[in-house]
Length: 226
Image (cartoon, rainbow, N blue to C red; front, side, top):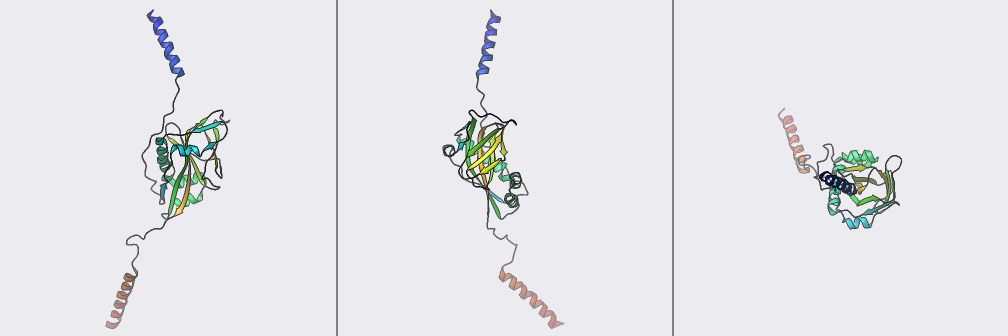
């Protein structure tokens, strides 16, 4: 009787485990890391929007659906933008094939700004993977123009990975991913900044005139006493 009871408990446990839904771990807000030592450009992440605002402006191709993420996920995405993209502008510039970003990275007179265009929870409804084991997704997101530097951040359940889009157009981005869940579309732009003169790097005009005058007096003095 005892053995039968244990067998029933074991069977119930197996059935329960089989029917449990597996939930992917949600991202947490990480710590902002320092940029690579060779980077000279200033960087900034524009203020983020609310999860509801992001999902309201994002549409996706047939076979997929999007829903709002948590506020924590949006904040986590912002930190990932800094660590994955802005902390090595040259590297992401090379990956995106964007010469402007590559050149800006080593220029202290440049500023690279990241705009988070959307952060949504992406899931497949009827879509299936291609022959390479990837989902092919096309998103419509405001703020994308032809030639923009666009990067995709995807939370794998353990960390944020950077995906290079397969194509971009006005308001549209297409990319592939082996898995779905939180997806962020990010635009990188470069602007110039005005640099203040470094202390001690140059002499004021009055000081230069004074030095010239002193040198002139010294030369005249030598000639007079020669």
